[in-house]
Length: 366
Ligand code: PEP
Ligand code: MN
Image (spheres, rainbow, N blue to C red):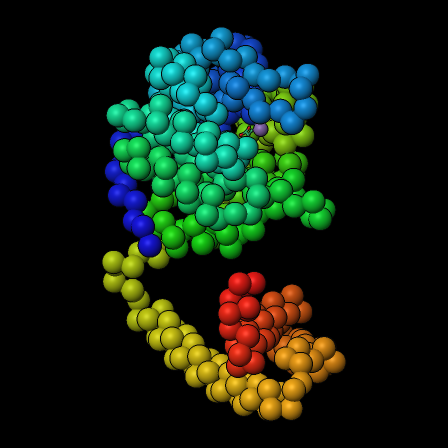
């Protein structure tokens, strides 16, 4: 595992930073209204505003470009907090640096493209500026990690990740499905990178922002980026998902920012006991799984000797249904039981295929 050496941002980026501002910068009045609302709100730690907007079809509002940059400088001077914008190529970077933008972010459509990410990284060589990298549109952890590594390799060490969800054509609930476990895997791969959640692009509807934000905090995320507009209904982009400053403050009041357990600090003894119990149970689970795989190997030997197929559909169907029913009796959901059993079954099939002396062929396909 690669560790990315991180530096403190030195921007007063406290824990649970809240980044607020419009999807797109539209008018000076829009920014003025937002500044009036945010001026005395210490919870807002950074201001966002889209200046170059990636639109799926041409003909929609594509951002004001350079015109908006001095306006954002003005916002920073008024609110005394850093401002951040999205950059998608070297020309954007150059313009942003010329206007002393404090923090840059790389959008989901850019993270998918290593050429663009590298172009941005190269244009930032030798520049000391924080960069936040949104997850790619598709649920590919390596692309997300890779983009952060490209930045780091270019000498940038004030990095953060933004979790904005993943496109899923089958999902009916979210605009971009959160796949929380992918964000948690990023945390495991790059423990020094803070993750900011973007509930606006995950939910796609302002009504969903509070619940998504709370879940993000429950998962231990380090901050929130929430699209905020003085008059969301009239917004030039992402109108459906933006909140007013008043709604934002209500949301922030209603969600609870729980502290993370500090592993360095003294852990209370009852928590220690509960964690010890979990460690013992996990040990037992691993022993039991190992016993189960031992029997699986014996069954594999039998199948091989009798020229039977590894996959036995009827047996698997019965096992799955029976275990799901047993799990339900113990208050474990069908979804959980299914994914748990599928993982075990997949591994069993792999082991038995190996036994069938198909190692070489199998290795190519898995
Ligand atoms: C945005 O932040 O307005 C934006 C375009 O986001 P994403 O890259 O997550 O789609
Ligand atoms: Mn947006």
